[in-house]
Image (tube, rainbow, N blue to C red):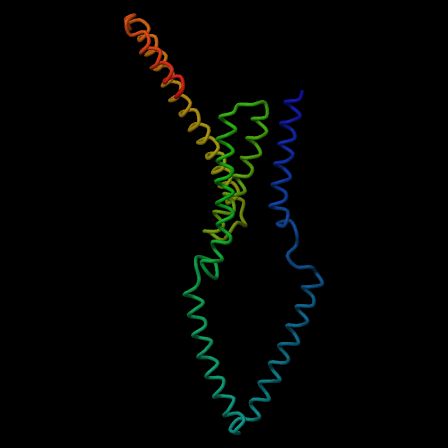
Length: 223
């Protein structure tokens, strides 16, 4: 009963963590009032631009208009230089490499954290292993979700989510196989040590009894 309660607790924690990371996706980016006010502003901006163009046309040939053209040309040149530099600073779909690392770094760190805890969970084999595995697998899915987004910049379709889910399940399974392979390797070494100790007991003469126990003590200390 305690085991089941603990696993349920970990499962609920996994749900809370996933909800915390993805809850913002269900929130409308702009309220209806904001959309309406934006539309009103754009309409007034359009009318202002039209009035400004008419004002410019009425001053063509005047010293004031010539001064405006000089400043406009300088502004256009500066803007083109700014656009080129922005393009040079851009990294993937981010404005800069710094921004990319700000989005990629925490997700990659979270992925390493989840892998570390999955390894610990598979090694310990305690009563809450199932619940912990679900929790850390959920964290791995979240990390993979944002790591891939850092490189691709798009996650609006269902196939993106499915691929992330497949990657997360594959990672958990690969981690499990890695731990099991490591355990088999260590178990094989221990079995070889036991066989070697058994052989030593059989072949060591009584005259080397002290040396035998010294060696066995060293083996026991390093096992």
